[in-house]
Length: 489
Image (tube, rainbow, N blue to C red; front, top):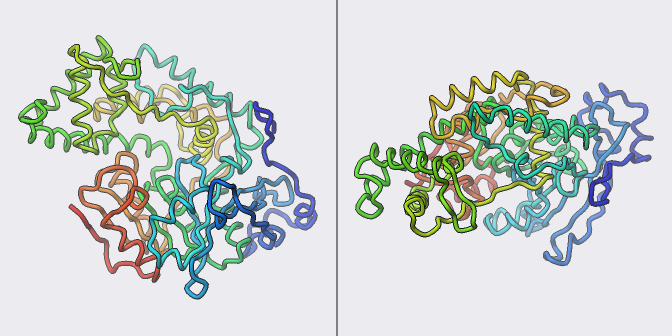
């Protein structure tokens, strides 16, 4: 596949692999206790990744089947990286790391995670990063999407719904025209299979793992598919595997309303400082008055753009950070009244590669997406009535309604006793506390640490936290807490 800038992806046919596997049927490959030998026993060539990082940061390529149902066929290369364990005697194994997304590149994660882990953990593990299939340096796919088409949140309105449907259809059409030969194979289950090939190629009988956000779902799927291969799994900011994927979108709305209610109470208690209202009801009214005013006259911002009411609503994730959100709303009110321009909202536009893989995974992992656009219209109206802040943003039509092929495999049902440690902020706008509790229910052998009052998406990845000691102890010793814990507050 040739990309627009002239690069070619790493989708190749490896003669040696094909020759070894030619006699294997797909059933033989799936039945094997290990990945097929040609993949499991491949020799990795480790080289310094680049001059910008330390020499100890090494990179290699791991060859995997594009289609695990046809292991003798086409292959792709998965870019992997590592920083070796700090102590030879203390070394326990390899810790794979995934940054989430989906569609996030993970090649540099070892050097990014290294300062966030204790010396004891770094002494015991090779930190191993990888770009998941379709991402970064691992057979990247691109759909040539516009900035508007890369977005997930589009507010519902009767007059613009036809445009929303056309946008969703355009994304699906572009992706299948550009990468239709690869898209059916970009799924979470196949990425989990890639992880198991990486494990085998590293010479490890079992693998440990740190996954963030979407990476928690990937890790949970791995524990379900390869329970005997899973060693010490840390899931930071967990998603409910039972909601994948459309119900995850809709689940953001319920969490947004809880965070919004908390924010109104916080701001009301500080009315003397911010002037948004002396009661939670008054603060709520002030916010919705601002939204209505912005719909009539968009609010100017410092980057020269202007925000209408829907754009302000789309910033609902800000409300988990109560103090920062209050400053933002105060600034918007002042700008709407003719004062200085308000701070610009973060752009947050995904790269074409990240967005393309996001849609491939969201649409290709499950067959649960409705195919009738009218179902999305009805759901958007219903969810907006129930969750005024963001209900329509999660329920409206998405490209998955028009994805050319349904998922090749059913969505993974996660229901096992594998040990894992879940760490979760109480106030997370993307992996909500309710979603993390869903993950905890699915992983019966897990324990969960909730950071009471914790704000934002990410616990370990965000820096020092009251959960750090538990995480480091688990990775160092393999011992989980005796029960679920709450810290902070």
